[in-house]
Image (cartoon, rainbow, N blue to C red; front, side, top):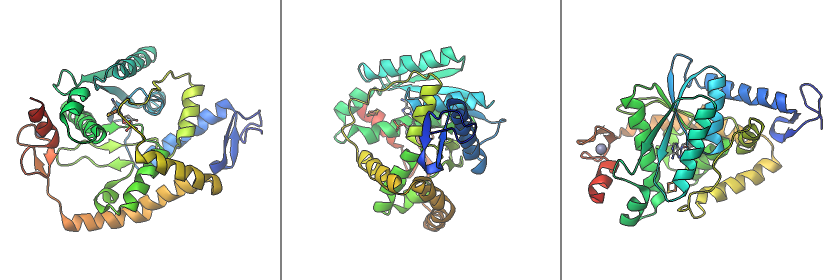
Length: 299
Ligand code: AMP
Ligand code: FES
Ligand code: ZN
């Protein structure tokens, strides 16, 4: 196969785009998709201060590198979950990456905040993953607001987004369907949240990371045991193989025609949020937020 652009031998083949690319042309294609993802959905501009959540995985590191190459004002944020072995390894990868590329990095250590994940897991009577997700989102938001960042970016890719959309759809979870997407405007104590890799698949991000020589953390979280997302992702791989381009089409059509309908409906229902009485984070409980309740329980 030859590169669609320059006719050199192709190293990456993308069926959804009916194209093969050589390394240089693939990297340009990747940059262009990120650019289209940002500009098409008006995620942020070069005047914004963007805090990029870095897990150590290939997606968030690829995102950070590409945004810095495109001249955006980026700072990394790593949440050290204090999970034996896995957290130290992930953190070391993030630190080495930021040092290598001379990029600013902030670290929030959950052990210092009194909520190391193993302790939360030991005290909690339900699966740790959702609590851990809640804790991470809380610190992403708090750090972005406390330090005056105007956007918080995560490395979610098209496969993550489509799997989540599919999961929300088969449950007809109208609340989640009303605000799923690459942009969540900042409001009522929430930072503006963006997912600039929404047009790119996991395969494309993996190729970018490989071609750019990004050394990433690969070990899965020791507490995650086959989440249902994996099943949804597998189903979508089959659908995409039979109908190349369906993933992006499904997601884009949802953004254009599905989400606005759910958003209108949710606005009519008017769920009210008030600041947590302890930390100010928005909550619908009318009292303290989920993370403050967790902290109290841990004490
Ligand atoms: P995941 O839910 O693990 O697939 O992660 C989705 C995104 O959340 C990643 O691409 C990162 O941007 C962010 N993220 C996950 N874990 C962490 C972490 N420990 N520290 C900072 N960002 C994270
Ligand atoms: Fe949070 Fe595994 S990363 S429970
Ligand atoms: Zn709180």
